[in-house]
Length: 77
Image 1 (cartoon, rainbow, N blue to C red):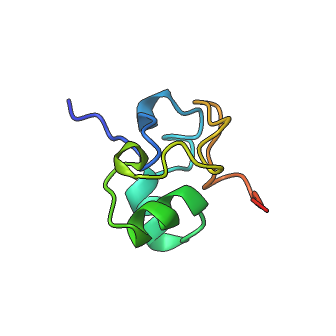
Image 2 (cartoon, rainbow, N blue to C red):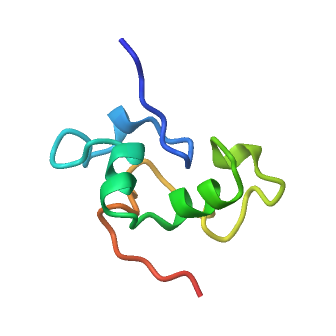
């Protein structure tokens, strides 16, 4: 069994949204382009946020397995 890991480092399978309308980080952001964390990682060519020189950044602080930016509209000022 392959485990999908989001750019943020959270395993999709532990997210409450996965398989309840969510197709996983990569597929959801290919369709909707809504996750600020995913977009940031893609711009910086990082497979996962932990590989970023700025980790942990403002986007990553407070991230929990209950939080999914694909299904939560967030504004980071």
